[in-house]
Each structure stands twice: as C-alpha cells, then as structure tokens.
Length: 249
Image (tube, rainbow, N blue to C red; front, side):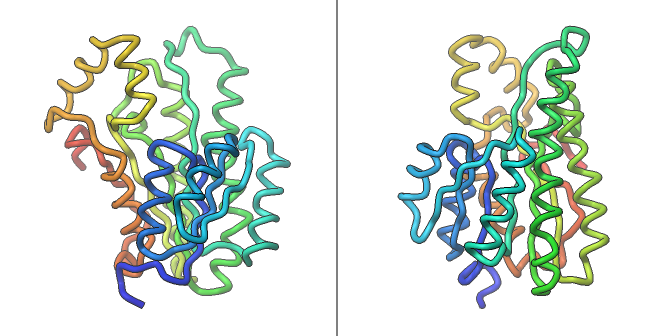
C-alpha cells in the first residue's frame, strides 16, 4: 500500500455531516478509504455520504450513552470494526464561566469527552487485534491557549490531550497511533454565523492570527488524513495545532 493512500481502510468520522467533519470525510475518501459518516443530523450525513464512493451515513446522538454504544455495535457487526476513528464532533456555548451552569457542563462533557472515550473503548480492541489503527481526536486551539467565553468547552476538549497521550502509550506496540488535532479560527458555517451576528468579533479574532486569515476546513482535513496514513506510523501522542501560528509549541 502507498504510504499516503488509505485503500482498504474503513474510517468512522463523528460529526461528519458538515464543516470540518465533512471535509475530513471527503479527504479521507479521496485517499481511498471507506467512510462511515456519523452525525445526529442523519439527513445531512446522508448528503455527505452520497457524494463519496462507498460511504455510509449513520445516526448517532453523542449525548446518549446507549446510542453511542449502539453505534459501536453497529460498526462492529456491519463492518468488522474500523481502522480509523476520527472523534470530530463537538458542541460549544459562548458564555463567561461564572454565568454557566452544571447542567450545561454535564451535556458538554458527555458530548465532547465522554463520547470519544466510549467510542475509543469500543473500537480500539479490534484495532489492536488487527495490529493497525488510528485514533484521531479533534480538539481546539482554545484548549491549548485559552479562549474567552469557552471555558467549559476548552476544559472538555483539553481532556482529549490526556486521553490521546495515554492511549498512544498503551497501544503503541499494537500498531495503533493516537493523536490530537487542534483547529484554530476556521472558516466554517459557524464562523459565518458569528460574522453575521457580531462582525467586530471575527475581526478581533483575526488580529490575533499571525497569518491574518481564517483557516480552511481542508487545511484541517489534510492533516487528519496524513495522520491516518502509513506515512504517519511513527507519529503518536502528539497534539498539533492548525491555527495560522496562534499556538506555537
């Protein structure tokens, strides 16, 4: 197999219906993988899947532990597990920490951290048994550098750092790598909504980016696809920002 191709591999991407997730699905599919597009919006997931060769749309509510378990069971029974798991889905609210409430914390923890942990627990054993696998977690640059109004989101997404590094150590001898990708300011539909509602906020955010522009979803997706390939077999336990230089480590 070519070191940058993914022919014969199966990838599960959560939150794959739109934005960064859909770009990841497209890019991985372009490299030859079969993509399972998982999302709470099944109609949007089906639209994404229809545009890709041999892709399948799957419904999942990551806020529901039983639904996440059902997704893991379905993936295992229908497809024999996956070679690549991209935990991309996430949910955020923008508010000061002192104005947030524990119910919001719980929901954000369930979706942003518990769900990736559950899916990793369900799908990692088969990867290890086969001797090949890729765990990729989409976090946020805000979890590395801090982001005003996103304390709970950042805290949950920062938990992925510890999970990914620990699994990188535990699964290294099984041929499984585990890495985190941290997008910064990316031109997504969500950013466009913010721009429409608060034009000045986006301009302020852009001034903090050395490149003075927002990233494109494809720029995140290409890094994810690289980490999924054999070319990245010696890269594990890493947290990599795609932020135009906001975070430099």
